[in-house]
Image 1 (spheres, one colour):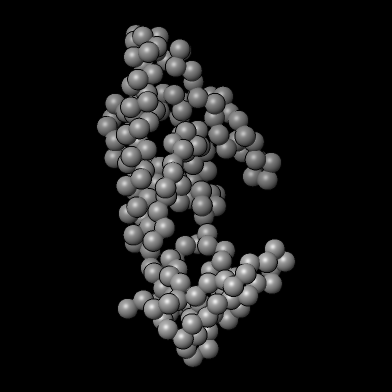
Image 2: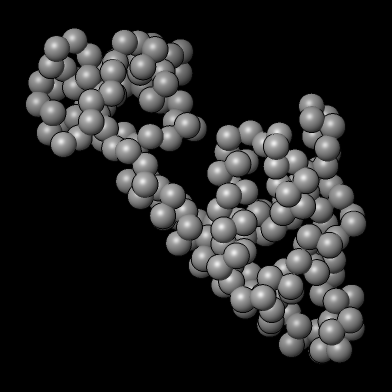
Length: 182
């Protein structure tokens, strides 16, 4: 099973407003990321969510203009030095609270992604009557790959239903078909 092994939480937070405002126009991977972010935000404390919202969502400084969609995809976070004055905290104390809120969100996102990937269907790919895709003999940059096949289902490579898996779609285009793992 494929799980996220690294999450750069700031990547998601600077896109929070974009995910919210463009929710009907997001691409598949963006939808997955937005779903994980919003579910994780609902799973943290109100105080953590408010801290993160002040810094990221409420920022008015937009960045990373997407010319194709004609929208800004990210914001520049408001500086801690500005926000600590608003909350009447030392910058050091405010930074500690912000880091803890980001850490809590990151941990919650790991849980969300794990749940999302656990629900995905596992299967193997078969061609003909009994040949299962096992792997690549060699991978060519020209797209002319040689494949390892096996007559044993046990030796076949396990795939996970993932809309972003190009390898899967390439093999389906070659005539392979999905076989559920029993």
